[in-house]
Length: 113
Image 1 (tube, helix red, strand yellow):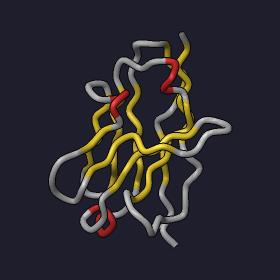
Image 2 (tube, rainbow, N blue to C red):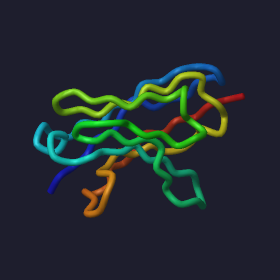
Image 3 (cartoon, rainbow, N blue to C red):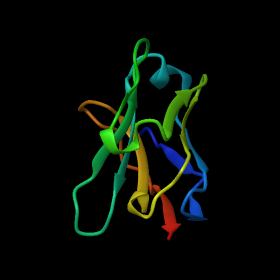
């Protein structure tokens, strides 16, 4: 069973920055396109950013220019700058496409106005 582990969330003021991390494995990151997702209570989980094995990264329109997804051998990162209150959510990482791995606990991001 693959277990993804997200970390790096916290409470930050609007305009601040956070860097999220997701530990996976070298095998996963060398074979699967990965994504960062977020979810707020009562809403569906939404895709925020994706990073392929090779090639272009993609972003949800509302985070373009503020968020950057990257990876190293076994970790996927999400650098979040100029955070806004509407970025408040629980953030998860997983594969971009089905089949998904088991969802982790996520990491909570709270942005105060």
